[in-house]
Length: 404
Ligand SMILES: [Fe+2]
Ligand SMILES: [Fe+2]
Image (cartoon, rainbow, N blue to C red; front, top):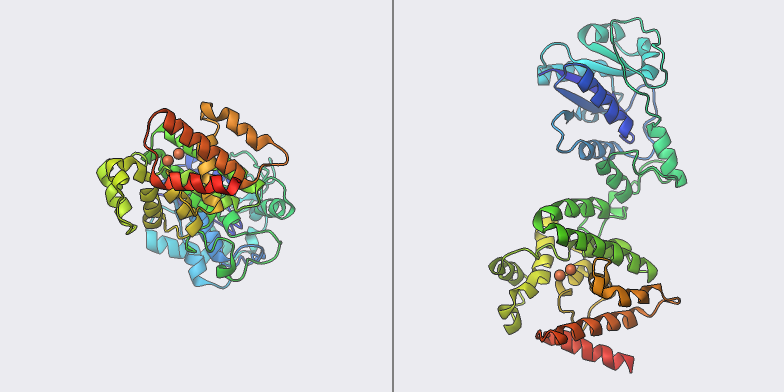
C-alpha cells in the first residue's frame, strides 16, 4: 500500500486539510493518507483551545467511514516535541508501505523545512509533496520534491478558532464530526486552553457523560433514516425543530427538547411483538389497552431503546419519549413540549389552526398550550371513535381542573 503522511496540529482540523489530502490522492497514486496530529510542534504553540485528545477525537470523527484516511496517534503517545523524522521512521516500520511514503508540506512550512530535525535525511526517505497553501507561485524549495497543483483554501485553524471565539460563522469550515465535538466540549470559546476538567464540560448529564448533545443528535439522526420510513423521518425532524423552538420560547432546555423530538418515534416501525418485548424491559408490565394496541408502546419501547443503544440517561428526555403517545398525569415540561411539537409540527396540515397559538404574543402559558393540543387530539380520536387510553383521560381531567 502506498501511503502519504499529513502531519499538523489540527487545532482544529478544517476543510482545507481534507481538500488538500483529497488533491494528493487524486493527483498521485497513493492509497491512503495518514493524518498525524502533533503533540507539540517544535515551531508552533499548540496549547490554544483543545487538548491532544480533543484534537485526535476531532480527526477521527472527521474521517469516519472514509477508508482513504488513517489517523495515527504516534506523536501523542510519544509526547514531548513532535519531530517528523521520528514519525516517518515509526510509520515506515509499522505500516511497511510500498515505496517511500509521501510527506505533504504546505508551502508555508516548506520555507522553514531546512530548520527541521534531520531535514536532509527526511528528504531522502520520503517523497516530499509541496502544496500551495499561501502562494500561487512555486516558491523555491531546495530539496527533491513533487509539486501539487491545488487550489488555495482561505481557511486556517487559527482563523476557525478566532471565528468561534468572536461568534462569527465557522460551522461549515470544519467537517461535521469535528464541529459537534467543538460544540459539545465548548472548545475555543476563550482563546485560552481547553476546559481543564472533562467532567465539568457541558455535555455531562444528558448522555451519561459519553457524548454531547450534538454528537448524539447527529448519530440519532443518521440512524433514524434506517429505522423509520422517509415520511416518519421528516416528521421526526420537524418535531425536533419545533420542540427546540418551543423550548427556547419557554426558557427550557432546547437541546433536550430536540433530542426527545428526533428520537420519539424511533421504534415506530418495530413489529408488535418486538414493541412488547422492548417495552416490557422498563419493568412496568402491559395494560389491557397496550396488549390490544401494541402500537401505543412505541413510546415506551423508544425510551428503552435510547437507554440501551445510545446510553441516554437523562430522565426528562426518556420520560418525554416514553409518554408521548398517551401523555400521563405528571408529565414534566420537556414531555409537554414534545407532545405539543409532535401534534403541531409543520407537516401536519390539520394542525395549522392550532399552530397559530405559537404566534400569539404574549405566548400562552405552556399549560394552556398543552391543554389546547391535548383537547384537540382527544376530540379527533373521539370523532374517529378510537378508544382513548385511561392515562390520557386522567390527564385531560386534570388539565380541565387546572383551567377552572
Ligand atoms: Fe409517536
Ligand atoms: Fe410522532
